[in-house]
Length: 468
Image (cartoon, rainbow, N blue to C red; front, top):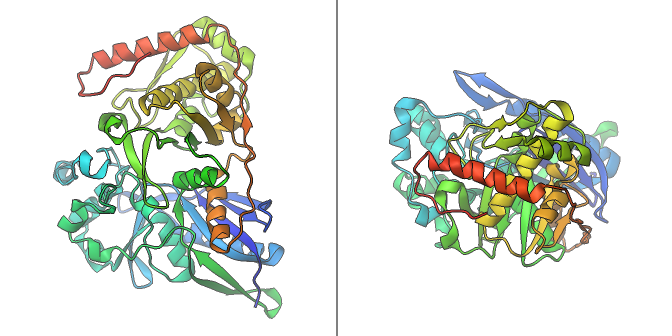
């Protein structure tokens, strides 16, 4: 029987899924990546879960053999669920980036609880995954009827490896329509539809729920303790709290830019601007605003994957090139089509315009979430270069810290496991970002805000105002 003290974390994003192996001292011993396959089946896009599971099991076996892994944990992107009966799915796992059929949409959306109950705004596609459960219930009632458990995405993988069906509050509380944060209980939608009996008992993220066993080469046998998974952005929030941050705003970046500020009052949340209350791993409401910043940067930049230079940023500002929202669904400027205005730019200058756009959207979101405390930036946008420095320049009254890891969700998942076994190996390794003086940046921000205010004025919406 083989086991050890190293922790394997599967950080499962919508676009990229990763395996990190952490040593007992918190260092990363190994890292692997793959892209999950989203395929079409019966006219619906679904996850090729068996292909991903095959990659995960073979990667975990190698990690056991190479690094004596004794624990496995899962951090997963939001908006996704699985319907499970006994040991199998009753329906493939839906891709959240698709709308229910038009004929069902109005009926589904009428069932959504009010914002003041769930602090979960009505969002498109499957961004409220309760909406996609309603879709399957209406279109394929036998799939939901046969299911003995509705599992959130990380809990699906915890179950695949351990056989244990459990729930976890940070995921179910993530703009799903399924949770009432002030009541610390399921929402009225769950009881109205009779789903409560299909929701397994809650177990805290990181708690051990079973074991995964598999043969190894040479006749040995792997035995790995399986821990209950966690929502990825909430995992990052837990990580930075675990290393000493208290009153701070987290800017967690990946496919989504998810911004948490516990100091924001709940009554400041505007459901029409993709503001909501997330729920921490300990069940506390966490005021949040978000937009699809990583996806928007990828689309707006033309897939640029290198750092952006100061010269390119200066050229874009001098030319008066502006990116206007939104290049992807969701966010505080829903219903507008992303585009550039001003002279045509290509290559690095296009990427610079995209970086300025995402930075200004983040700055706008920080105003809306009433951020006045320290800011911690985590995730993929750190790798663009200058994102943290630009934000620090735009917000001189706040200290801006940049994570050295850019993988806060994986580190948070590992920290939850280490906490469970009584170890605390991580230390605060963030660095303070120095503001980057950039001629014309403040005027550029004012012009950008004016442009989006003009766009908003053309569409009458019951929204709270934002201020330049």
